[in-house]
Image 1 (cartoon, rainbow, N blue to C red):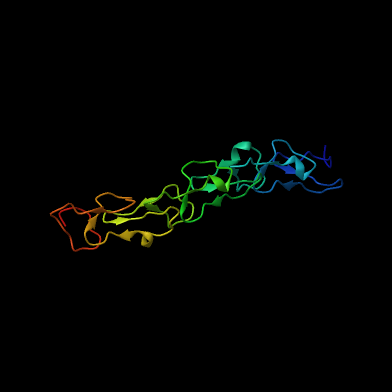
Image 2: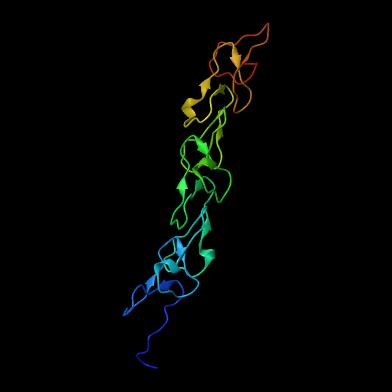
Length: 171
């Protein structure tokens, strides 16, 4: 009847006796039943996060996007991989899932899911590069026809080029 003590709703808890209200589970957690302790709020698993306060469903925990990870439970946000690295899959649980960009490629942005290949006429012999400026121009007498080249090729006998950044034999 009127004035009776009422159970806390799902997604909430009442931490002490004599309470006049229920508190919501924090972002990164959910409760499928009303509870009496903050520990009744279940943390989202590693590799997932939730922005929702007072969540009542496990499905509010979403997988971290490509380029991001969560190596702790109960996350309210995922952490971005650093520049020069990439992460091509969702739900990563470790910073070690972030891979260095391969030779010939770079990543200027945080949270990259792929790395960008240096343009033809350039090369990049190292890995983990963070900027397009890291790509080196082929010197005169050499060329590269493909994106993401690791080195430039020498002009064949009987040919030459006087240009930096040649992208074909014909230049």
